[in-house]
Structures are given as C-alpha cells and as structure tokens.
Amino acid sequence: MRAHEAPRTRSAGRPRRAIIGVATAVATALLAASCAGPAQDPPPADPDPIEGTTGSTVESTPAPDTPEADVDGAVAALEQYLALEQRVYRTGDAGELERMSAPECAACATKRDIALEAVAAGIEIEAGPSRVELVRRVPAEEVVAPEDLDPEMDKDVYLLETRVHTTGTTLRTPEGEDHIPAGQYGLRATLLAGPDGSWYVVDLTESA
Image (tube, rainbow, N blue to C red; front, side):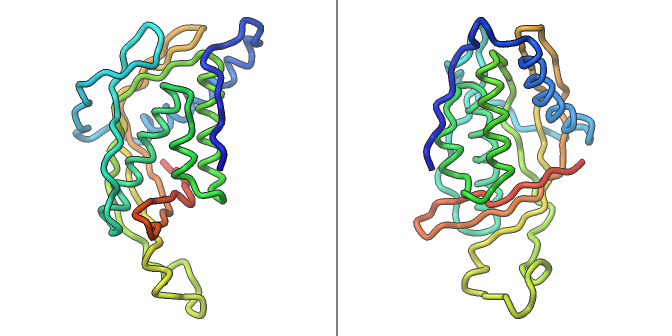
C-alpha cells in the first residue's frame, strides 16, 4: 500500500467549520473511551520525549520487537498498532500504520483518515500509550462454519476480545484545549500473523 503524505500544517484558508468537524470526530472517539469506564492502573509513560509537535512535548512510543506468533504476541501487536496510530497524530506520517493494516481493513482506513485530517487541521493530541487487556481469544469454531474450518490456516488468525485502557489525553485545536480523562473501551480485533514474523490488522470493532 502506498503511504499517504499528510500536510504538516493547516492552511490559512481552511474553513473553521472543517476544523471543528475534525476536532469533534476526534473528541467523540476519545470521550467514548473515557465514558466507557475508569482506567485501571495505566502503565507509566515512556520518559523519553519525541519531537513532532508545536509548542509541546509528548511521550514517545518506541516500536517494540516483532511479537511472537501466539496469543500474547497478538496482544502485543495490537498495542503496537495503537501506538502507531498515535504516532500519526504526532507526525502526520501514516506509512508504518498502513504497512500494519490489511488492505481489507475498512476500520483501519477510517482511523488513518481521521488522524491525517486532524494533523491537517492543526490538531494536536498528547497522550501516553494505551494498554490492551485480553478478555479472550475467540475460537475459529465460533465464527467459521464447520465445513470452512482449516486448522492450518486458522492457526495464524487471531480474533481477540479486549479492553483498551487509555491514559488522560490533551486535545489542542486552533479553537482551544480540552482534557479527556483516562478510560477504557472494548475492542474486538482480528489479526493475522504473517510467515515472516510480521502482523497485520484485518478488522477492528469498538464497543463501550
């Protein structure tokens, strides 16, 4: 997939209503997480700062080593994906996020587009890394008809029901600043373990 080149700054002529619309979409997603439930023991933020925002310092989220092809690895890969999504908001570069997104993942494309539009509108988001809590791995037998089951292929597909724990978030727009409290939300994710040790997100569905 071709990486999108996002503008780093907002053009002077961008309509105010467009900025508000993008900010509303971002804020709605963040508020949904905070309203779903209080955060539980979020991990400490990485102390190393990273450049890429104007007038503020945000915490870096270093890319982890390639996770192993097992359930724990799938959870780590999902955390890595969410960290890459945050990186788009900081840098406007969606290349790494796109490389981890399967072509058929419509939710991945939506998340990418919202992040790129936010950057183009001059919106800054400051937050720590999200933590993924595994609820359960959904067995293939629950979602695939018996005649379509293929143990050799299905072993590389991980359908996970999780809770995502977010940190407090600061949302800065040309119109002002909002603070979103830490929270959590449900995330049902399908990941595919590639033969070369890579991981791909195939589907994402959020819930309260």
